[in-house]
Amino acid sequence: MLEKMKKRNGRRNLAQASRYSLKSALPLIFFLCFVFLLGGASRSDIASVPLLRGGSLLFAFWAATQMRKEDWVRIAVPLGLLVAASVWMALQLVPLPPEAWQALPGREIVADTGRLLGEDDLWRPLSLAPSQTLNSLLAMTVPFATLLLAARVRVEDISYILFAFVGIACVSALLGFVQLLSDGASGAYLYRITNADAMVGLFANRNHHAIFMACALMIAGTLLRDEFLARRQRGATKFALLIAAVMFASLTIFIGSRAGLIGGICVILIVYLTLAFTLRGTRVEVSPTEKKRFGGWAQLAILALPALLLFLTLNAALWADRTTALSRLADQDMAADLRVRAWPTVSSMLETFWIWGSGFGSFPDVYKIFEPDNLLAPGYFNHAHNDWVEVLLTGGLPFALILLLTLLWLVRQVVGQGIRTLLSGRRGDYRLMALVVIFLLAGSSVVDYPLRVPSMQAMAIALVLLVFCPSSRAFRRHLSLKPNGDSL
Image 1 (tube, rainbow, N blue to C red):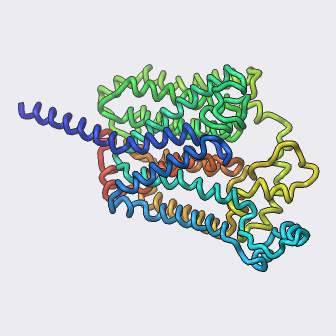
Image 2 (cartoon, rainbow, N blue to C red):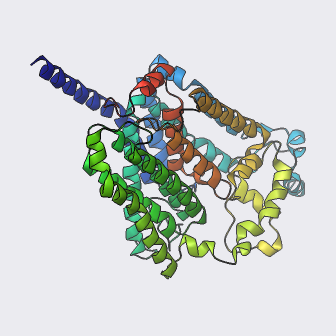
Image 3 (spheres, helix red, strand yellow):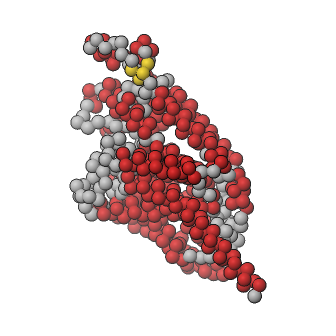
């Protein structure tokens, strides 16, 4: 009788803790849904930008009023880094004396034009496109709001946020299928300037959608691993996560992004190996009942299903008339791609502006100054398609130092939590997943600009803070639990 009462009380306490956890995670979940709905493009002239930034300010102010002292301590370093970046953006808008401004590299053509117009005595800001730099400063509302909201989420509640990312990715994938069956002028495309012939989902750019699908695949695979490590087996949840993971993997091929395809293949291998080791029981102790339930043909079917579906997807993609990532990867005309032909020009711009920068958001305007005649076209080159280069070009050496400090802080957080246990496969340990997502975003930034999209910014900041910046006591308690414990 006493044992039954203890079990009943334990289940009651667990249910109450779950309700509390969900309640504490809901503000960030609502904000993420809000950002992914309105912030899937990097342009400054989309109609949803004022609503996105205004809503982000409201979320940020509300979160700031709810935070405790330990929450502020927890985010002190990342908050300081965001403030430093914002201050440098603001300083680029401060007018400088004519002598100081004209002495800056890359301002000669503007200075000469000013002399011809009799305006050589004007005070000008460091930025060559002040309106775009101001837009970049206002865009910081999303990172600040994400940081403040994530600071209130406990380390035990991260799984709710991860399930929210999977749910958002499913919505984006389903919307992509609707776009596949419609034309570019349909309401299924949320943005006017977009890849109208591709499955862009909640985004304006197919590359960003493909990278997000690869990130969502890693998140879904990690949650699926946790479901197999749990004592209380939830078959419906495992089946849903498996289907979602296969769908995300397939979309990295169908979307038509070369970067997404390469990233997707890497994530597929990581997820597949993680699940294979988990199901084989090489990382955790599995009871005889669980071995019987997931062993034999059932285990083989689960392991073979993703590979079978991906094989069918590859064949379908190879024979389809629609442009896919594989067909674009096999295209022999890649050297004619504008981003490749424009690289010498971008390199010349970098040599000119790397010290003080040309101003955040100024790349399209400054590129027109350096653009050679043979690259003139009706369209415009909106980004360098290498964000590591563009942030140095527009932000200069001061922002490069801020970025370096950010990377050093992140490495310190990763190393401080232990490298040996990174691959241990404990339930609730999301560090490997977060690192893979970070590497995906950093790697794709070499050829694209995913972190200029507000929704991708929110995802990256939330994962970094939740996984790599918990309170030390909470993290130690979190990892001290048994691999298949029910407390998580």
